Length: 272
Image (cartoon, rainbow, N blue to C red):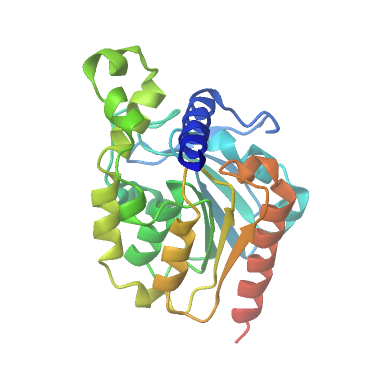
């Protein structure tokens, strides 16, 4: 019975995911900008801030996934805030890019040399954030990773991904969900490549991982995998009771506080 309940929960979560939008999200009044490589993003500028926070959404998604955070006055006071449309989504170039490294490389254009750079990633956005930190460890100063997917063994294509990959079902999906499923099919292989890299270059980075214990989309063991692989001392895993994969939108105060705490921590570190 437990197995049947787990399967049913997964199915329900998947179909909720097909339609879910962050209903609590604040409407943004920000101009969409674009990098030379076609990456679209919005910016809440703060010229005097010593930090820049780059938000990276999951699959599917857009920059609006972080609308509540971009509208957070406390975060606005502490940092310049940027939220991207990953390649394949929103106003960015529409071609599917399933490579975590390529996604990270393009987002890396938004790292700045005159501020500390903090990455926030949700779901698939989390391994992309970590891939970027591995590419540019001297330019990334901290990460907050929410409901991440890291363990290759846990992220093999699900049965519904396989079905969605057939031409008939794929034809019926929206563009965003075609792109999303295209990212999911090779994800385990991408994560295997990511896990084979030397994460020790991140030892000096403060990293906070947050995962709802009732997440049926990205198994909470993904975060245990990551926290065990990270070897630095400035790391923490926050496991949250009665929260699932949509903790990003359902517990904005918790996530915001962890971002603020990390900003304060990196501010102190920069003094030494």
